[in-house]
Length: 460
Ligand SMILES: Cc1cc2nc3c(=O)[nH]c(=O)nc-3n(C[C@H](O)[C@H](O)[C@H](O)COP(=O)(O)OP(=O)(O)OC[C@H]3O[C@@H](n4cnc5c(N)ncnc54)[C@H](O)[C@@H]3O)c2cc1C
Image 1 (cartoon, rainbow, N blue to C red):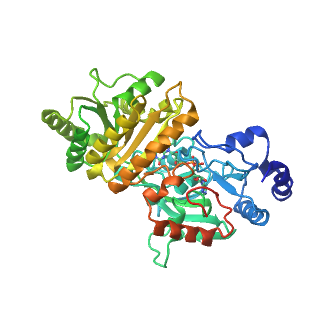
Image 2: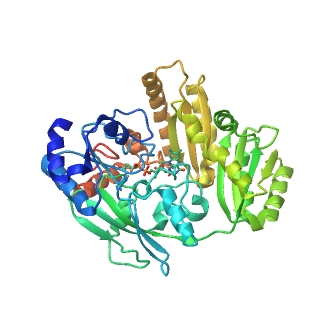
Image 3: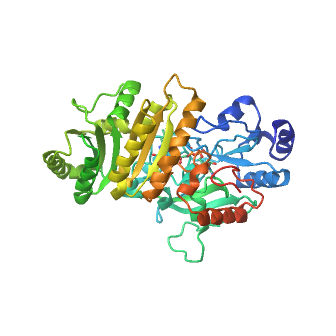
């Protein structure tokens, strides 16, 4: 629908919550992706569940689509409004509502920024462990809708593991309280888990009960150089075999060079290596970690390394990994966020590297990721002289071979960023026809008129 038709309808029902100025449409109509058209008809910023219900009812009555929007840091086009939809931003529903220390549960609104939940947890002497480079902007609702992972999954799991309850407005306009923060609730289908990772296609998450963890002891960070990729996994096995690690990330020398060039960070140690692993351990286990490190050096798996001696140094080392996505963003990367089981990584990576060298001999290819979870981020960078549409077209063709390879290795074409519009055409590489048909059926139940995030994840 267009702005001229919708604006009076929306204003009559939602007054000053409605924005139709060009700047708002451009800002709220997109996420971090840059390869989709952006054309919302309006933006609505509700302040209550009742206003969300009113908007869903209007959408059903007038036949417009709703795009739920959190921090718009998504990387799959899930929060993009390409076709006259109304963006429903949760930005004004951003409060902590209550805290229950006995259950270690925070009740918050979906628009609460992830970093603010982390800070709130710290103010209660507790810890919210889901963390990644975009935590300062992303929102809890967006994290839940994408089942966000991040850098601590190896120890703490995904967003799903911390969601104890949800309040949602379905695409039918019904308000559901899902699980009520309970640990035990064996009363049939748990719809909470359907909404986690549903990418706004079933309804709007308006509130969440989030469980908090005990504050971890101080952490130390090691960055080690690994000359041969297959040895990254030997290093992983050596550390996880002896220690409870809280992160195991990897990045290539090219990724490091991009971060150093963009942010002015120093090289972690003098001699470059083909790959690096960043390992986080309890500071109290530093000596044990050093012993594992030395054994890895003796084996020839690690060429050099550095361990943080202070919190400041630990934070500086983390920047080498955390700043990679941002460092690449101005080079129009074609992003792949893929996973296979950890044990399959060497074989998969060997085949994938050969495919990529054959397909993109002249492109820069940057590997990094949460390798401790089997999650690899493969970024192909656009040569400056190549037109963007030609670049994406070429990458799209190669994706078919890559996704077929992922399927053969039993992996996933979207490890943690979601499907959105970016991966929708390729969903069949990770989900069977029967799976997709059931997803459509589920969507039809929660969103009978197809108003929720149309064109994302699956076609209705
Ligand atoms: C630099 C950078 C690093 C990143 N690192 C990671 C990482 O390590 N791990 C990871 O998992 N992701 C990562 N991401 C991706 C992104 O931050 C996550 O997907 C995040 O969870 C998105 O949250 P958001 O609030 O920005 O959601 P948005 O981008 O606003 O929306 C994402 C999806 O959720 C839906 N949605 C949003 N709010 C709601 C709601 N209240 N109800 C229903 N649906 C809703 C949207 O419609 C959309 O489909 C990174 C992104 C950037 C830019």
